[in-house]
Length: 178
Image (tube, rainbow, N blue to C red; front, side, top):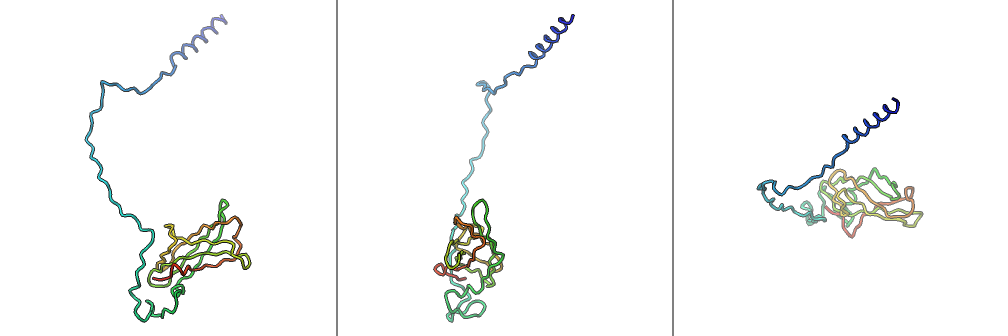
C-alpha cells in the first residue's frame, strides 16, 4: 500500500511535469502572409547653421578717435579693459586624480569683453602648472558679458597643487577688448 502510494505520487509528479513542459515559441515568417506597404513621406533634409567656434571681433561702436571707452575713461594701454574684470569664487580641487579650477568672472563694463585668460600655479618663484580658463561651451576665447560668467579649467599636472599660490593672467596676444 505504501509502495503503491509512492508510485502514484511519482506518476503524478511526472504527469505534471509532462503537462507543464515549456513549448518553444519562435517567431517565424509565413511567406503567404505579408503586411501591405504603407506610404511614408521621405524626410526632407534639415539645414542647420554651423556654430563658429570663435566670435568675430568688431571694433567698439562707442570708442572714438580720441580712444575713450564707453564709460568715458581714456584707453591708455592694450590691457585697459582688464581693469573692468575681476575674478571671485575661485576653487581649486582634485577629482579622480585630475586638478580642476572653477571661478566666476565679473565684467563691470557695459559691453561684452573678449579675452583669453590663464591661471598659473607657482611653487615659490617657479611656475609649476598653467591652464586656460574656458566657458561652459568649451571656448578658450572668452566672451565675458556684463555681469558674471562662470569659468572652468582642467589643469594638466602630476602633482597636487591645491595649496599652491596662483595668479590669473590675461593673454595680451589674444587681446582684451570689447
